[in-house]
Length: 122
Image: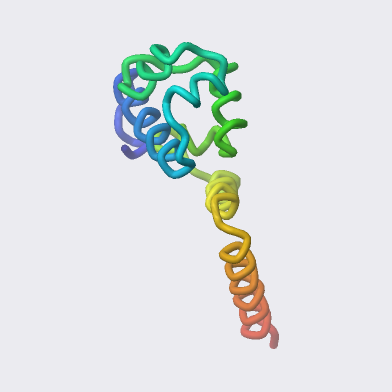
């Protein structure tokens, strides 16, 4: 979904639902367990995942905290992206890595930044 497309509740529910299922699967958390962690009924969580309901702001914050993602992760397809959103998305990806993968990625990033600095120097 692009920001230029008309947004309605159904589209937002579908985009949100897709993100919830994806991150829950990545984190290997059942819908039942996520509902417990977020202090909502399992029925309500299933309704969110079936794109028939949206969470309240309080439940959204709980979901973000339990799944270690920024709110923009869930809302990304519905919002205009800016630099802060890109940084938050990258942060979420980094947090999902194993310690070994994390060190490898950080080393690679530091090398790239060093090379970019060399290229830009007169």
